[in-house]
Image (tube, rainbow, N blue to C red; front, side, top):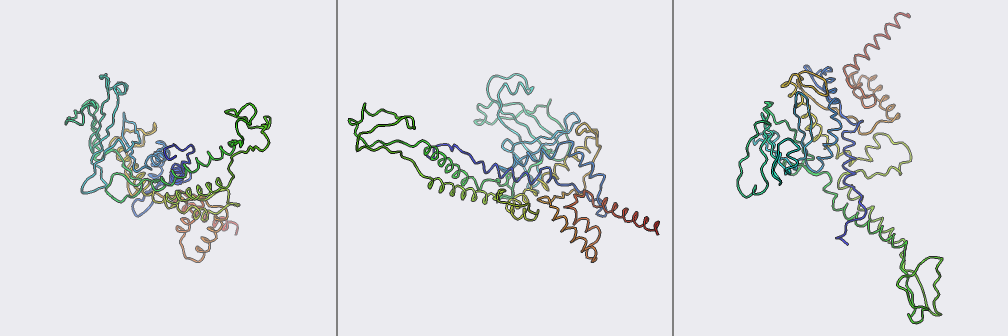
Length: 436
């Protein structure tokens, strides 16, 4: 039975990955970009420009796809300018070989892209005609160049040392000073210098496979109980006309047996199926717990829960997404934005989504993540009462009060909101003076 493929696939690993990514880069969980200028003041103009660049590049969708692909361990994002147009491309790490600096393990020195293609694929890509067969496609991304190499036949590639020949026609000198690839490790691994991070769902694979086999066998048993086997306790010579190889088992076909004979159906009861389903629930819960997935059931919630209650119910999932925020947010998204800004400085006429933004200088870029779950009206009222009490007692400043209300009001810029509040207060004081 263990050599048969399960007929039912629960896809628990896929569920955990999609749930974690939905809390990471979905529409309501996309982080706001904060840029601190001089004197720790927000640079609203530059924040708005970078926000527009992210929307023009459809960066939320790209980062969401990168987080799904990188759940196996790592993923790479290639950022380059092609004909003065900024292009972002997600690269699978299985075809890439990164080289990091010995002095700074976070700094990429070179990334080699290498995989096998056929002659037809090379011709379609514009490399010209080649004899039939398979070839190695090789390309290097360095700090100053993107080096293309001539395709090399696969036959004999590993038997003798073959020198790669540069394709000078396609090689590009970008002069960025950094490799135009952002390498993202999924989760912290045992080896901090390893190119791949820890897989999101590796801890729950065994339990998921066992639950798939158990659930598949349970379904087979239910199908068997729907068509039980008939057993006749009678000698063949006593049966009129002999015993046929197959008998129809329904109400329209009666079977006449001699006196003293017996006919019965071999069927199973629901005890085994119920025990199997209980075991499957235990294996499912074990797999989700090992992967820090969401083990709550929506049908058990009878009323609307507050944001804090939902966070406690999904505590394991929020812990997992909190670790992913560091990998794909602070080390991934911020690095992509800084690389885009560096390219805009190198190519002043760069177009992003058909628009020209000019050179953008990155400085003190940070991400402000939203709350895990949207607050309810009860949560908003509780936060407002607490902030009002603290402000009236003089325990917090107006700036801190606005920051405390940010999860409920979705304020983008604290400085602009403070200015609006002060203007409203001045307007109300002026009206009161005019009335008096």
